[in-house]
Amino acid sequence: MPSFDLETQPWISVRFLDGIDGLAETGFADLLTQAHKIADIVLPVPPAASGLWRILYLITARITELDDFGRLGTLKEWKRARRRVLEAGQLDPDDVHRYFAEYAGKFDLFDVERPWLQDPRLAEECAKSTGINKLVIGRAAGNNLVWLSHHTDLDPQPIRAAEAAWYLLAWSFYGPSGKITARTVNGRTESNMAAGPLRSRISFHPLGRNLFESLVLGIPYPGGEHARRPDADLAPWEENWDEHQPDPLGLPPTRKGLSGLLTGQFRQALLLSPSPDGSQVTDAWITWAWRMQPTEIPDPYLIYDMPRNGGMPFARYAKADRAIWRDLDALLLQGEMRQPPVFGHLPDASATGPLRVRAFGFDQDGQTVDKQWFTASTPPVLTMRDRDGAEPEYDHARDIGHTRVAAERVGSDLRQALRRAWFALSDPEDGRGKMRQDSGDGPWVPQGMSRYWPQAEALFWQMVGERDFGYPNNAFIRVALTAYDEMTERHARRGPRVARALERARGGIFATWTPAAQPPPEEQSA
Image (cartoon, rainbow, N blue to C red; front, side):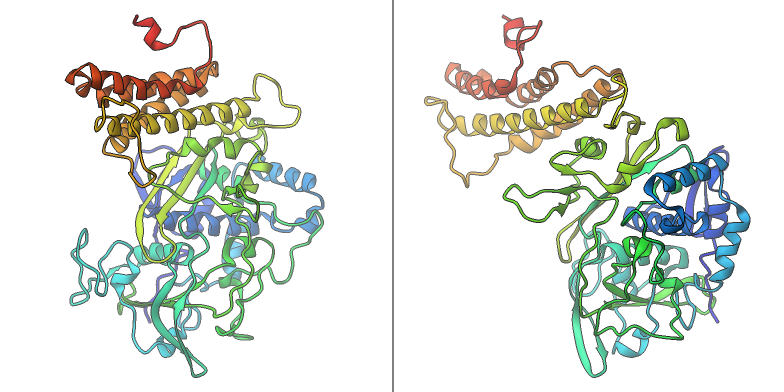
């Protein structure tokens, strides 16, 4: 029978600390036993990496027993236990092997009874398969036009089993909603499904000096202070289907504790079809998993924003054109934005050294359109977060927040100035750039903003590195003026009327100028 056991088969790309051998692939067991020697996971599909980290957090918590909050008592005692784990410097190999021995065979991608994160019933409950092209995000499938992919359903090409595991994770966490392959259960046929739990979202993760630290630091503390690990805290591969197979027409299995947070909100059901030797996947079934949807559980790695008009918080969306530093203050302190819970319980730098932040985002719509995925990391900034009783020289979280707000406000003023400048050219005599609400941005805005944001980011990190947050508005205004002048300089030569109109629009960039020792740029040049 074909087999691909993710415990032992190489499928996770990693980079070791010594960096001598470049990238390597490993399985779950070796990854965890050597985590202290590994610098980072380098999975080429960011949405798959985002899901993989959540699964690794759960397994690491099982191995270290940091999932049993009741045994450890209060949050303070749980933090002490985590510090002891960090001080050990690595995961105990015996504990790692003990966990995988308990669930031997449960990580097999092609297990007949319960393949990992899949539902074997789909082969009978679906009249036809969905196809390998649909599984591989980015391939053209069905009636979609061929743009960046030259794959067609007339000649579907198989993929390595390791790659299939990546897309299995990506679909489980970021899958779309809407129409999909029909599934018939107890005579009821349905063909629509709900979106995955991380659909169109951006998630943030703490990074330590090695993979071991990153995994331990990423374990969240959910629930009450004295809630012992509940019996229902079972991941999908830890459940025993011999006793009870969940009903797809009802609610998904109740998962509490860490499993509920990290692996308890899947909405898609998948099944992979292997080649005879198990080295490749040749076909796939993808359909809905449950007809009834439970209450959504807040994810510990997402930023939650409060609606301006009140209501429930909502997870921040991923935007391919929004750099990670623009969300940094939300990770460091509480405010109008809700900090991801995992960042509220991090230890100080004495236990781990400076910590970085990794972001995984997938810019998507709510249903089927996948625009762009991305990943990014910050320099070591988590030692600068807002803490009770922090020493003044280390408490720069609010300074970072004010600096980010200044960059956003100046960017908004630059956008308005570019809009007004463009529309002012149509009426240079008036020079006020009158615009209707539906008049759009004009061609200068995207070009000007593409000049502003990279320079603003470089300036931001310079200010953070030098701990110099004086007059951030003025600093970003100078960057904005450079971008504005680059866009309008050629047109200013068309005559005094046009030049006057452009200069009036330019004045809007100075809206937040703060009186300082240095005069505004136009006064310096006078």
